[in-house]
Length: 329
Image (cartoon, rainbow, N blue to C red; front, side):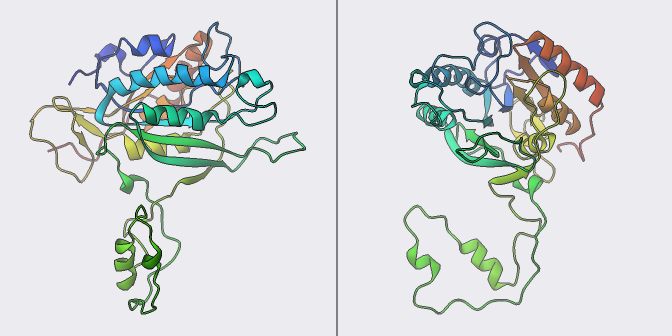
């Protein structure tokens, strides 16, 4: 594998994301987690910046270009996590009738799917502390979307790392349903099977012994503002993604991911920590979370002042990294 050189690990690069990504080696990143600039919502003070395009299709085109570089950089077991918000058209030239949602996230997702990405989840980030809205003729926006995408059908994902406690208790074993029409009677060809759940219920268990799947609606408070950057991702959300999608360790030879409780590859090569890339680093939350979880990171930020503030925040949060529970055998 072509890994990143040490001078690029745990560092903030200043510049245009597409240009800088083009200089990074193939298959060198385990997960990309980022929140790109939303369409025409903020001006970050740099000429030609992504997010201030004249119409929504140009925004999609530019982000599509960024993610083509991301596809090259990801390891075969890697994944892409995109936090996106929508905006409303102020003029038909932006891509929709005035006052209509532009559906930017949906347009981008369809474009990425056409580029070969597998869309694994559309996660609703429901904000428990949404910003008050002055609008009077529609509902306030209280959630954003997080897309989970991969390049291959088989990829690294550690569900056990993010399971949540069950809210119900074990019950007496159930007898199989004898009704003429059970739920499976009405299942269509693309419906998800329920045999595993049925088996657990027959044995009196309410769910997996390690906890329940957290599902695709995450109720998390918005992040506290740090420095001049207006959009700060919540640390809780970022840490959840990293725990699930970025391995604790990766073989430096074959790129096989490893996490506690699993067997290592047979290369006998040294391991490195999993690496998280954020090409729109902003206030630095991704880097702070990666450090706290013992992963490596690389951030890119277009605005030099924001980059300096992010570096200061990362240092203030402490660069001491936790030791892994055990090393790969």
